[in-house]
Structures are given as structure tokens and as C-alpha cells.
Length: 289
Length: 289
Image (cartoon, rainbow over all chains, first blue to last red):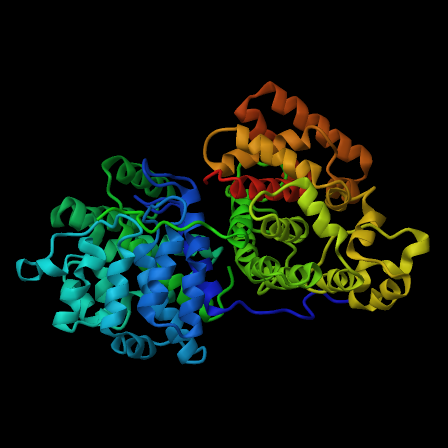
């Protein structure tokens, strides 16, 4: 008898869940939770629970449920038990990517996921707003002419959405300038696919490759979560420090940067979200963990 | 708007998957893969993939599918992509525990899981044998009068099972003397529930508590996977060393034991399986990660 005679492959939803796990396992990942570092208010174990809990919503996306509804269910499951925002942004990227993987029959492409986000509706936008009721998400104040669309209002903002006739893609357009997850939605998931290339071209265990891609992405563009929390200047400084450390190529310096960022409260969460998306694309293309 | 207004709870299948993740994350866990240590032929990332892949079978167990079929699907999913045996034994404990959690309406008890295993059939036994075709599982030679029941024969052994009319519980009875996962089946999951108590009474992140329970269990009984691979004497020696190290309470000594066991190829996998079961029971009882 041979092992593997009945080998199966993972589904897109399983690859998305695995991408979340590989992302948080990757270390060192300066400023973020990883398998060696907790933050004061967020622990590695909560990310494991978040990934498992998100599974149902990811399977809904795979099964063809509306994108907004699948996202809302994924976030509700993610926050089950702890109520923490562990992977809100990552799920906002993974849900349309899972759908695109199914619709394109396995050939996941920027064009495919663009079609998925262009097909979103006002109902999807309403579900997205409801998802904010499951956990605290750090966001900026909305522009003055869009106070009625403040995501912190949760489902109370739904009538305003309906009145304005905004789809989920329209909502993303409103924040693409200050939020790089939204910018993925409006720009064909460019950096997610770029992360997938970095990961695919790299070597070693997939979580290590994710950690390296994280540093590469952080070195090329200021993280928008850091910018929202600490301002543009701090985000640019963090980018410069990541670039210098990456270019020096000294593993101890990367560990030291990880310690420093945690101490300073610099938490490049948006970059981590994009790495999770990149890990998913790499898994879908056959890279093994 | 308050976060958590719509908080959900995890399902039994999700708790089982999370238990697998928390088990492998726990460190130091002398001789086993953990978040800081890979073995030469088994990596942390493969355990993450194994846990995610097992999800479908665990949900089948929750939904009321036959125990054997749910187990076979869990193992097939676990091995998807890599064909490694990461959590075969743990799933053999978790599948009936998930079912018992559902049938008992949340009050998971030794009596409940005893009822589940007593209700298993010859069909469940056949599915268990088929599960061996998805990955290599380390087993002893069968007794001389049971060569036709060698699990390594996979589905080829099914006619012999049917001829002898053996249920899955009967099959477990055949190996309870040399396999402590089988002994859980025949003994009301005694050590799984004991592990749950150790974990519940302990403090800190749940993966740390799992690692401590691992050392406690290893210190009280020789690991049967170690005994199969290296003989009874080595398994007893490993137990003694675990006991001395645990009693000394020096974290560095536990790390040193972890290094030593990995070097010597001492891999107490059965004890890890029981810890995964204990983590599941603790999660079902409301302990949060």
C-alpha cells in the first residue's frame, strides 16, 4: 500500500484560512504579532482562533454567497470568543480573492478579482458596515461631507449608504487614499499579487517567506495603519527603518527592529494584511507550506 | 455602537481545529514539533495545514455523519498537499469527542464519549482502515493471529474486518495494550479529560498551558509512540527524564530536554495527541485561548 494514493488538494477557503495562519506564524515581522511576539492587547493564540473562526465566511465566499455577507460572517467568526480585530483587513482582501479563485477556475488573476469587486452591490456595502459591530477597528474620521458614512456607526450608517446608492467598491474608493487595503480593491490587488511573487520566488518554509515579503513591502511604502495611528511622518520613518534594516541583511538587526517597533507601538497591520493575501495567492498557485 | 454586540461562539468543530493549532503552538514540548522547533521530516507549517485540512471531517462529525467516515475525511484533508501524518492520533480522539459534545448538548463527559465509541460499527472500522491510505502512520506488527487486520493493509483489510464483525471500538480493543490513543477509546478518554483539568486549572495563554500539560502527562506514563519506535526501555527513560525536569521546574532545563529529545529522535506523539484532546475539552468548557 502506498501513502498518498488518495491525496486530496485544499479548497480555496482552506488556503485562505491557512494563509492567515502562515502570516501570523511568520517571524520576525517588525511591529506585528508573530509566533515569538505578542502585543500587549493582542496575542498569537487569538490570531489562531481568528483564522479558525473566519473559516465559515470564507467557505460562504467559495460557495457563491454575496461578498459582503461572506465578509460579515468571516469577521463575526474571527471575533468569536475574544472580540478582537485580529484579521479584519486580511479578510477584506481574502474574501474577494477566494471568490475570484473559484470564478476563474483556478487561474487567479488581477482581472478576475477586479471583476469580483466591480460586481459588488449596495447590499455588500451594508454587510461591510455591519461587520464593524463585531470588533473594534482602528479608523480615521471620515471626510466632513461623509460623516453619515462613518464606519464606526456600523449598521446605523446603512440608510445613508442606500440613499447614496454606494456599492462596496464605491465605499472602498472613498478611503483608498488613506487605507491601502481599500487601495487593493480599487487597484486590481496589485500589491497582493506582488507579495505572491516575492513569496513564490523566495525559498524555505512558507511562513519565513511571508515574513521576508512583509519586510520588503514595508520597505517600499508607508503602512497606512501606522499612518492612521501615529501620522504620516512616523509611517514614513518606519518605512525608512525597514528599508535600511532589510538592505543591511543582518538577522539580528531585524530582530532588534521587531523589538523596537513593538515598544514604540508601531504596528504595520496593513502590510500584514497584504502579506496574508499574497500567501493565499501563492498557495492557490501550488506553493506548498 | 459597542463592539461585541453580536458576539458569536465557536462551534465544536472549530474548537477541535483550534485545539490542534494550540497543541502544536505550545512550546517547549520536548521531542515534538512546536512553534520553535521542526523535526527533520515534519514542519510546524505542515501541522497548520493539517489542522485546516482536517476541518471538513470535523464538521462532518459535528453534523452527525458516521464516526469512521468523518475520521477518514479528516485524515484525508489533514494530509492534503503534504501526505504527512501530522495529527492522525489527535483526530482519532477529536472526532468522537466532537460528536459527544454535540450529542450531550454541550456537557461533554466521559460517559457521553463512551456512548459514542460504543455505538461504532463495522463500517466505521472499515473507514478507519481506509484512512491509513492517506499518510504513513508508524505502527507495530499486529499479533500473529491478526495479520489479516494489519492496518498497513488499508482497505485490503476490510474483508477480514467484515468476516470477523469488528466495530471500530473492537479494533481499538485489539491495540489498547500498546497504543494509548486506543486506550483512550476503551477507557472513557480518561487522560484526555485529565489533560483538560490540568489545562483548566493552569494559567496563561492556552498554548503554554498545553505545553505544561504535555510535560505532566509525559512524566506520568511512557509514551506509546516512543515505545513503538525505540522500545519500552527508552520510553520509560524518557518518562523519567520528563519527570525529573518537570519536578526541577527550571525553564532552561525543559528547553535543553526539548533539544535532547529532538536529537535522539524521541518523539512523544501519543502524549501530544492526548493534549490536543484535552485542549478541545477545555475550549468546550469555555476556557479562552
